[in-house]
Image (cartoon, rainbow, N blue to C red; front, side):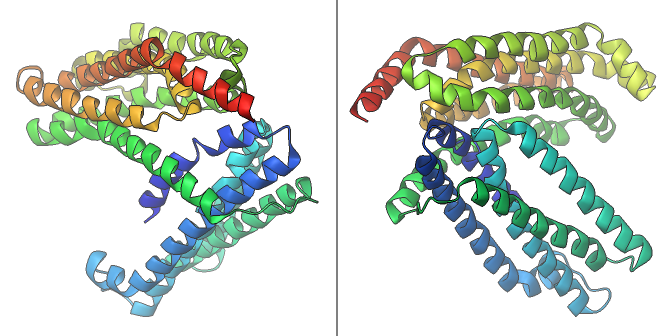
Length: 384
């Protein structure tokens, strides 16, 4: 259930900063957009919570097969978990609001403070009260609810005086766009896992373990993209529809210096880097080339993000679906055919192939479709 909510958030969280940013000059407009997204997050969170509560007995006895201990203890833990998911998912609308208002510092500080408090509360309850799942979840659930209240109070204070409300038509429009983008995100997640799925059935367990070790190290470099994209996406959402490209140029420079360059340096120093991290000669021997290929793939993907942000701003979720669908077919076929001959190195080449396909798709979109999307946005802005 949490994974399903995460998938839904993957679609919504890429739309809310855009729409909030576009309305940021108008307090009533911001309040209306926030009301729309808040209502959508609430309805999804409430649906997941209700389904989860109804499914608790079945989950405990059939899915998780929790036969040890009293059933009521297992039920209580699961019910607490779904309550935590409810507030956790609904709270992401506040993070999206601050990102859209270009107040990422406020979102980051609050996330760090409350994450630390959650872990501290959970650890304290387990250590000093009761070493049980219930104690652990009570700490997280209570602090997650407090985080929601604190964030909602702050935003309401900022938007005080506005009576904007979400209509059914607003929610239906959001559902359509989010649904399309969520499908694209889901396909992207499948692309990111296809190498593991195929390799796990075609190479030895020991080689697969070595691949996972080096792949996780390489994929950690994806984290360099997050802060940069979160900072520039709201600006792009405002500037690109009116033909302004200043932030796009700044994003390109930032990607080159903060994303691409570190990946290239890491690829060149991969043997030293891997030996320093793992201290295992066998893993260094068989894992260096896959790691280098993954670093190069992330560098290529970082360049693609420049195009991807523009695709998102112009609402081209269907293009993302087709790109990732093609990626699944091409990358999956390559890894499947290459693994018997190349072993785990096929996984690294698969990552580089997938990133290259994405970049090619981004270039093609810019060449053939961007002008039409920009013209349509200009017409909409003039009509408004």
